Amino acid sequence: MTSQIKNPCSIFCGSSASPPILHLTNISKSYPSPAGPVEVLRAVNLQVDAGEFIVITGPSGSGKTTLLSIAGLLDAPTAGTVAFAGQTLPPNDEETLRDIRSRHVGMIFQRFHLLEHRSVVENVMFRYRYLPHGRADARQRALALLDQFGLADTADRPARVLSAGERQRVAIARAVVLPPKLLLADEPTGSLDPAAADRVMDCFRNLHAQGITVIFVTHNLALRAFATRHLRCAEGGLAEESNVESPMSKVSA
Image 1 (cartoon, rainbow, N blue to C red):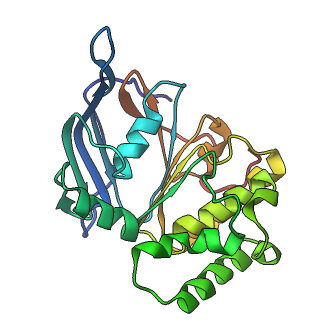
Image 2 (cartoon, rainbow, N blue to C red; image 1 turned 60 degrees about the vertical axis):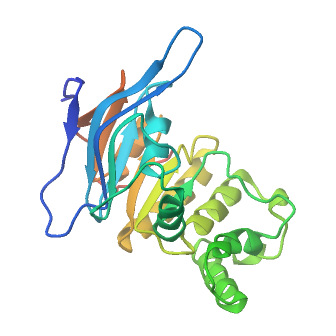
Image 3 (cartoon, rainbow, N blue to C red; image 1 turned 45 degrees about the vertical axis):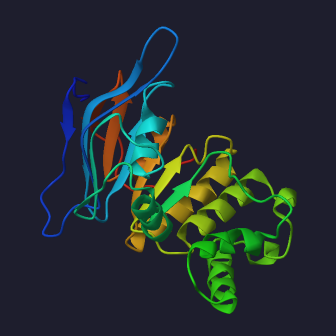
């Protein structure tokens, strides 16, 4: 049964001995417009504990992507606080936010954002620009991930020649080549055919099984089956919903 969406709304899971990976408190977000501020999120609370796989659904314009951007430290809320692994983050300290993003947060976008004329392995290695690792170590880790995702034979091809499903798996590999505490995905199967979407979801299933915490935004209600927790975003709020299938069962997108 669907719970009623209301504001402010609090979505908390069970208590944990360690601090949550992510804790959003009373998050509001508005954007300026000629007619005045447009409020996208209103007093949203979200606690994400280690090991969760959260799927967030909702209609277009409901604030899903805005919420994901704030969770990924790419955007600052208009009001409210963001804490990561127990540390409350100052919204204007870009150096601290950048350090946490580069070391602990992986982000996957629907449109891939690959370097089209670079090789697949160079795209995966791109995140190492943040850290002082040797190039040999970076390449070894990138090649291992490509093999894990069934892309070993594409390593030296330019990204522009890949299929949409292959490009999304490259984007996932890039996001986790520096193992994140939190992996965020914005409609990663939205432009894929069912077979390609299944392979992408296999990647997410395996990464979650390895202990990575996942927040996944989608319009596709079938993907609720992968979640340990399903939330719905609408009218600037967030509400808990029950899954219709057993968590982590395989579905076609």
